[in-house]
Length: 554
Image 1 (spheres, rainbow, N blue to C red):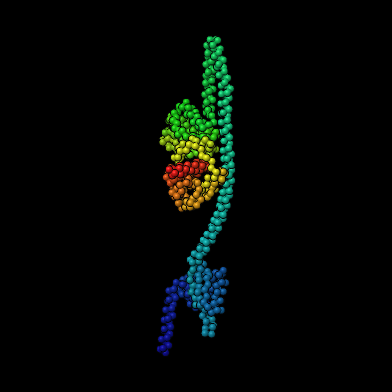
Image 2 (spheres, rainbow, N blue to C red):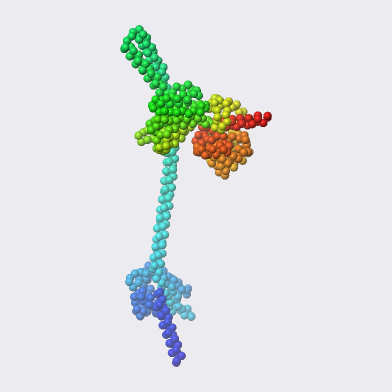
C-alpha cells in the first residue's frame, strides 16, 4: 500500500515538474487525445488565445486556422499519420486580439504498441516576424528585378540612341568634311579671283589710265610752252596729281612681281613700305637663302604677313614690329613679332560675333597651300606669329641652299640617281605608316623597303635592309625614337634619319639632333614635305660619304 502511494506521489511530482517546464516555454505546447480534443495546453497557449486551460480541454483548436491554410495543414497531419512520422506545417491562426499570426507547428502522433492512434503532442512557434521579413524580401527582390529589367531596357534604349547618335554624328561629320572641302575650294577660288582682279585692275590702271594721264601731261606741257597761262599750269598740276595717285593705287593693289626667286623679297618690301606709310615701322631680318614659292603660295604668304602686320598696327598699341625670313630645309619660316599688349589666342582663331574672320580666315587660306600658322601671345607680353610654308621644288633649289638644316653646305644640284632612294618607315601608328607609304609610292625616285612598328624593330630592320633614309617617329614603344636613332647612327654612317613628331617641340628637336637625326618634321607638315626632305637628306649623306671616301685616299 505504501509503495503504491509512493509511486503515485512520484508520478504527481513529475507531472507538476513537466507542467512547470511547459508553462515556462516561449512556445505554444499542446497535447491532443484520440478524438483530436485538447488534453493539455501550456500557459503560452492560454495567453495567446486569452483563455483558461480548463476552458479549452476537450476542444479542438484546428478550426482557429485560417481557411486558406486549412487544407495544406490537415494534409500534412494526415501524411504523418499514414507514415507514422512527425509533421511540420505552417498556417495562420487568429490570436485573442483578432490579429492573424503565422505559426509553425511541429507534431508527433502517438501510437500504441499495436499501432493504434491515441493522440498527438506538438508545439507552435510564432513566425509572423519571419514571414513578414520573407515577404518584404520577396517584394524587395521583385522590385529589384523590376528595376533591373527597367534598367536593362533603359540601357538597351540608351545603346540604341547612342548608336543612332553615332551614326548621325558620322553623317554630320562627313557632311561637314564635304562642306569644309567645298568651303576650302571656294575660299581658294575667291583668293585666286581676288588676285586676278587685283592684277587686272593694276594692269588696266597702268596700261590705260596711267598711259592716258601721262600722255595728257605731255600734251599740257607742250601747250604750256606755247601759251603761258595760270590755268594751264593748274591743269598740269591736276594731271600730275592724278598720275601720282594712279601710280600709288597700282602699287597698293599688288606688289611688282617678276616670277622669279626675288618675288618673295619684293613682296615683303612692298608690304613693309605700305605699313610704314600707315605708321608702322617694320624691321626685316632675312637669311638671304634661296626661297622659291609657287605663285599661289607667294600670294597667300605676303597677304598673311600683311594681315599680321595690320593686326599689330590696329591692336598691339606699338608702332614697331619685326619680320624674320629664314629657310629651314624645304620650308619657309616667316615670323612676325611685336612687343605690344598681346591678346587671347583662343578667341582669335574663331570668327567673331560681329562677323570678322581675321586669323580664322588666315588659317583656312594657309591650309590651301599645305602651310600652317603657329600663334603665341600673352596679354601684356607681345605676340609672335610664325608662318611655315612649303617651298617650290625645282632645278634651282639646290643651287642656293647654302647652310641647310643639317649644317652641311651644298652649292650644286644633285645628279640624278639611277637607283631609287630606299626608305624605312618607323612609326607605331599603322595608319600613319600607310599614309606616308602611299605618298612615297607616288615618288618614282623613292622606294619604301620596310616598315617598323617600334624602336627595336626599326634598329633590326635597318641592320637587315640597309636603307638610305629612315623616317623615325620620336615616340615609339619598347625603345623611343631618340634611342633608336642613336643606335642606328652608331652602327651605320650611311643612313640618314629624319625625325617625325606630332609636336614642334624644341627639346625633342634638340634630342633627335644630338642622337644623329639630320632633319625634323611634324606630322602635320610631313605629307607635303617628306619627299623633298628625303631627297635633300639623302643627297647630303651621299655627299658626306663621298668626301670621306676621297679623304681616305690621301
